[in-house]
Image (cartoon, rainbow, N blue to C red; front, side, top):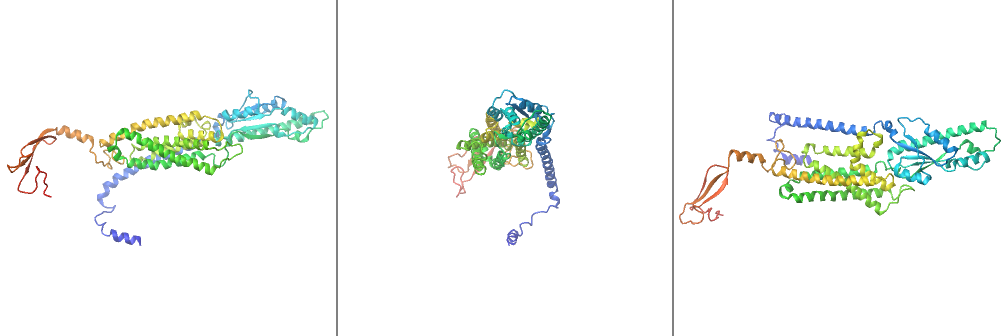
Amino acid sequence: MLGKYSWSRLAGQDDHRVSFTDSKLRSEIKRRFWDYVELVFISTTMIWAGLSLFFGGIYNRSEYANNIDIYVVDLDGGSVGANITQMILGIEAAPSSPVWLQRNDLHSLEAVKAWVLDNAWGALVINKGTSDRLSNALNDGADYNPVDAMTLVESSGRQVVAEMLYVSSTLTTVAQTVSRKYALEQVNNFRNSQAQLQPNIAALLDPISHTIVDVAPAGFTISPIMSTFGYLVILLSTVGVLIVWKMTSFPFFTKVRYRDLILMWPVLLLGLALILSFYQALAFLAFRGPNYNSLALTYTPATFFKFWFTGAAVAFSLGLWLFNWFLHLTPHIIAFPSICTVIPNVISTISTFELASKFYRIFYALPFFNGSKIILHITTGAHSTTGRNVGVLVAEMVGMTLILWVSIWVRQVCVLRGISDAHGWFHGSKYFHSPIPHYKLEIELAETHPPEDVEVRITSKSPSVSTLAGQASPIRRRPSRDIEIADYDEDSVSLTTGNLGV
């Protein structure tokens, strides 16, 4: 029905048009073809660069696992603690495993927890009194709980993926290995012993076990992608608005003062960032729930505002960054800065830079990374680098604002001089179309036709007219000839009195 209606309305309108096979279009198709080839080349480069960055950040992470340090802390101070410490430090370090170190300046389990929360990936703690409790169980048959022997302290909030893949698994594996080895040694020692003892059989066969304490729990379902996906949605929502602003800003650059422009754009970007980050904070509150773990930090109104303003800082800095690019790029490549921005920022949040080559350390400066570290600290309290992260975000916002002021000035100059058109095409491009003449045309005309004094006379053919008739009005014009306009009195039109015969 709609097709028939459209065909009847458009009938005859295609009569003057040509088909793609017409020879008149060959030159135009050829020019367009090379434009498409250029786009394919750029797209291919961008795709391979993006994929290489992404997979390179997570490729062979185990080769860099020895950049992670895990500590053994002997709070027992007895034979059991010394034996377990020797077992752990005697484990041959593999390139694909974290490195074990010993720390002796911590004297309580609470001190170890606080230290891991702020500084470390994890620690295996041999608890106080383990030697005495085990000795009493073996010699006197006293009650014994093997899980009181060791405590595995981890901090999943430092970096969720690395903690799950390397720290937590390594702590658990080593603890189980120690338990088996110690049990075998103890049974052999008991068999070789001549003493007549009535040991606690459970303590004899299973002397060492452990409990796990996560001082900064972040192992809930959405934790690895929570901030990453939130910031990604904000960024993609911002891109569309920025493109519209770029395509519709031509009248602003021709009519609005520069000082007003450099105030308007940052204020608009900040407002957009506040709105989008507000939605992100609400979504996290709705889908995460007030508490995700019994040890989680309480979700308070202050937490909500921290989420909100952190997201706003990330969105604002990225919006400034992208708008700086969009102001100067031509339409056919305007999407590529978004790709260059999205991929490194996503990599910075899902990768652990200790588990990647040193090249990726430059990603410490990216907004996604710093915003995600702040969010993890807000929700878990782990490994506070908030001061550094906030400083980086503030520096990026200030720096990008200053650069945007320069970009606005450059864009306005290009518009007013006819160098760039409304869509961003530059003079010389076949797509360029600007109502403002290119400034070099004015220069060339001035050189070839220097300004001369030209007399324009409005001459009345009636002697009774005494206004401007016969008077010369000198003006500056490029044409090098005088102009004389004859005003006849016979008609009803008069240039001297303003009567146009209407």
